[in-house]
Length: 204
Image 1 (cartoon, rainbow, N blue to C red):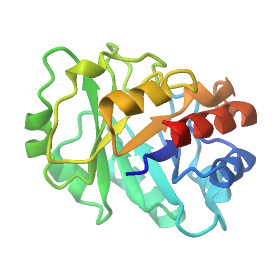
Image 2 (image 1 turned 120 degrees about the vertical axis):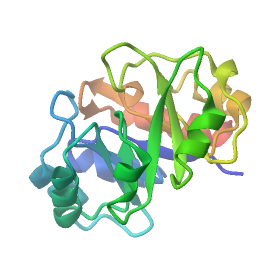
Image 3 (image 1 turned 135 degrees about the horizontal axis):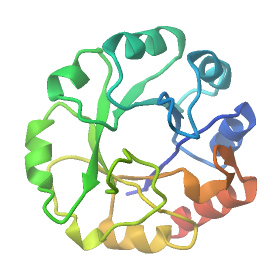
Image 4 (image 1 turned 180 degrees about the vertical axis):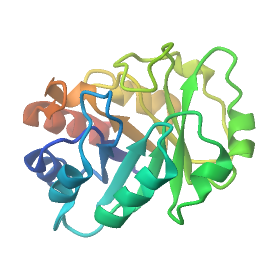
């Protein structure tokens, strides 16, 4: 099965267009102000306007007030929500859009328990754990901790063109999610790095 790709932390229209041109299935827009990759609802709307069909536009939130999520949905053509905080299943399910729930992987993480707890999630996104940082650490984690669950798995955390092929062969994820690994600087994507990443995914 083909491994899907999400390029996250998009802050510029040209980066979204390049991601789509090189074959990315989804782009991620970060609605979390402390992040160096954060965008406003207005910026997100401009980035998303008139992107081609069959591209999933994902809105990423961290413990956001429900009204903030609803405003983003109203003004940006989001088709999938991504929750990276301590959100409950009830919170995640209230917006009438499919969602994915991020899991910050630790030695004690029980993926089966997450899959049961977030039974309505479209997928679980597996990211590195770092105290006080909800995501975007740029660090990999021990992929051998990943167990098989009855839920699509999206692998994130420190992926680059140098390690994504190995990650795909070892984990066999439904999709991979990259942000810092394809950046020239925080929030600004490198066209060469995106192209190299996409080539490695295709060859894995």
